[in-house]
Length: 268
Length: 326
Image 1 (cartoon, chains in turn orange, green):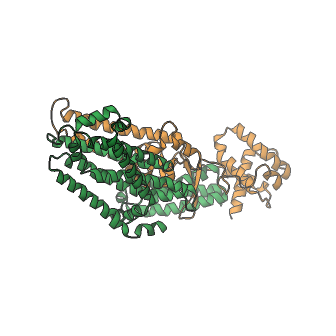
Image 2: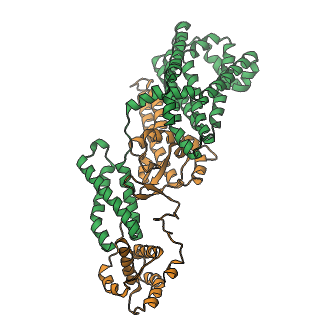
Image 3: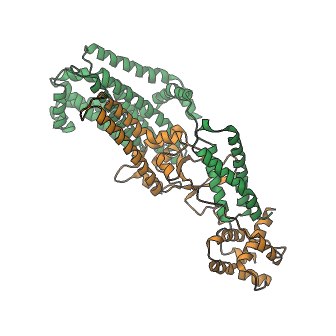
């Protein structure tokens, strides 16, 4: 029975175990000795964040420029001296080369554009970046965006962390901060109690069976009742024949009960 | 205990951590209340063990994913970026960086490449007028001629000096940083920028010094020359070092070698940028002064001595190399 249920998938196929099947995440081990996944940001989201940042920079420069045009007497009225254009150019230099670096250094890896799109720059270790990393990756942006080849986009395709050249040189990666997710609680305890006795005491599920059950229980709420039944029946049929279960048992609830027993039993 | 019970019992704590996170997200370090941060750290560690449990007990997929995200975000909030320590920066700027600049072959490759091309181009332009025309272009040269036809600075006002200083910062320091950044293409970008500037400037110097306006030209360029030309050389040297790290990896993987070299090259490019800023200030406010050439010449000597002291004397210590080996 074990072989039959586990042979469809290789062992340890989930991304929460050793081998990794998704390439849009990267694994980080914390000082608390827990490994967690970071979702990496793709080129499109990052380009959007850059557009937001550029729009902010351009509007700031335009506003300051307009104030100067009206106050330095180019259109009449001479409130402050022409010399302020020198300060303006000085300011422009620091804004252009320093905005991204300063924002990422002081704002824990986020420019305003990244904040708007829920992105953050972190080191490989998952730790926040320091000022030197922030400056370096932003100064090298110019090299990443050389037209017409955009070397940074190519670089992103050829490494596993979607890094552009500036990221590679400074040891950083851009991750997505996803705040949409909620814990999905399998609220089935009342009805699964009746099904408990149907599962044999010596039931010893394989790892891949538990994973399949966990995947099913985690996602069943998003499925319609009919579809739940249809999916659950595939696995349920096998157990119904093996343990000669009554036909009245609901396949969906039975898999929930099986999951509770399988996962709970292993941890104890 | 059943998984659903564990999840139900732990959910309030997870919600607490979420509200801690949204509280921390928009606050700087000094605005955080230490008692709440301690509570946050405790909850974070508890959620870390929840995540381990979720992985080993195979919690439902959605819950595990949620815990991954919760731990990831709490981790970035707990371990924030290092604060600036002025002392470390000064040590780096005056002890480690000069030593590294002095010992880095890239500095001397850039130095000799620049000066040989510059002097060669200068000599060619001085001997054969059509060389400068071919390199720089007719219109630029006639612009230069008319610009220096009058003795400099006679009617320069403080305002226009400030504007020109701002322009020199924006333009020259920007070129320096671009030259550094293009070094990531195996150093080729930096070398091309360096060679182009050396030949271009050499041709202009060769043309102007043999023209009737030679004295006016010399009066203007002498004072800021040492800082500006050294800044060009250092920008290219930093870029060359960055690109070279990809080729000569010293046993690391290429990406790792690049990552280890990156911060060091940023320091060199930072020194180059400081030199560009100082040069821009001299070029804007001192070079246009209508004073005897001796003062301009003294400024050139003084700034050259500063450079020799910075790279040659401060650089003699071994700290840079030792911190590289560490």
